[in-house]
Length: 294
Image 1 (cartoon, helix red, strand yellow):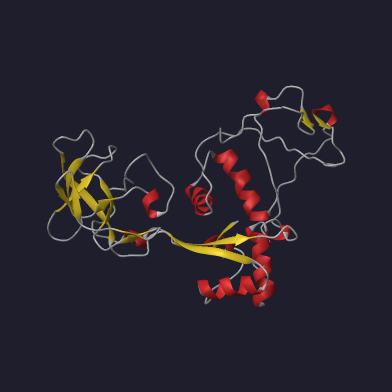
Image 2 (cartoon, one colour; image 1 turned 135 degrees about the horizontal axis):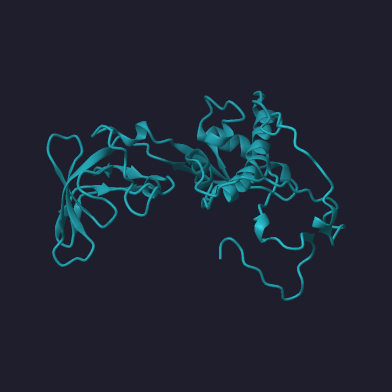
């Protein structure tokens, strides 16, 4: 299970605890830490740059020689294979010496025999969810030469092995409770304790059938109307990406968010495509189904 330090910090104040110290605490509590990863931009050598010129590389069908202004007083030549940008766009530029997430160090080199003195970056290359296919196009009011780390959130990801007898740790809230017990620090407000608007409840009738009550004695459903499917807010998408999930849309993403926040699995159905209600049952022999990943 991947656990985000930023997400954990929503529920418990972990200020002053280093990554190694927290890993040791969890290990001594019987929670195996398989590894840690630093996410986001941690160097000042990734800066806002503006594309001033763009010329195709001779003999290539996708590479371009770009002259970019990275706030250095002179233009920097970089070869780029992305196709979604134009002259005048502002994009992240990794200068030689920059180390990107995953330990990838940027160096000067040649592409198709053309000098390239850095790299223009996509959002995913900076440990963020992709905003578009290709380079991350930044707002025009961003100041050239500004380190990207000044507006990009960094994070630490703990890769944990949770044993079968500790399902209470399969969420960020559960892990925060464990850390509160280990450190003696107080928890912040329980995310599940916030008051919600009263909703009308009624028996499901024939809409829900429990065909395997020995496995699922209780099943509840809530109908939500007026939902417009679209991209999730950036903060939600960032949290899912941080722990290795791919954002799909706002409806699917919020169910995944609740799962990894509280440890409670949810699923959303399109009511317009359901006929005959829901039947909670075992799979039938040889039965096939299409998943979200297909």
